[in-house]
Length: 193
Image (cartoon, rainbow, N blue to C red; front, side, top):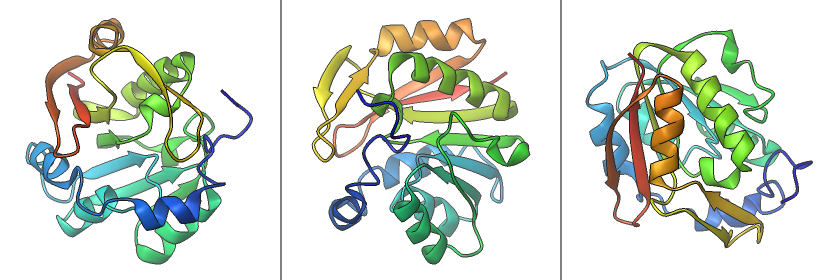
């Protein structure tokens, strides 16, 4: 896995990603999850890409979205699409997350792109970025596995549900549920007490 490219290969395939990203997959799952939040709540979208479909759905549903993505091309599209949204072109590892805390964090399609050590770091940083009683939603396969990303051809890694549960518990976070969307993407819904 090449670690020097903080976009995990997505800068090189940004145009292809934007043309092929399904504009509906995951939307109903994310919006159902967001029903636990008050409208207008602040949500950090890590690995937001060009904002379709997750950021768009959250913005349209009345949330204040802060997007972070390491791909310059994807962030340029995000900024053009959502000029009033907060946006930062940065890898999550380098981001200060706008020097604030959030009511919720989403990371749809990001976790498994990261090396296992970076996944642990992401969970720690999200914990620090969440307000008390804040929520975190991320995707990664339920099974422990590795595979080649269809667009970047880089290795993707799922730690598996059992390991994610252990890491979340060790960080003092509560796994409140798991679900799958219409594309069979596996979601972990987490709360910070």
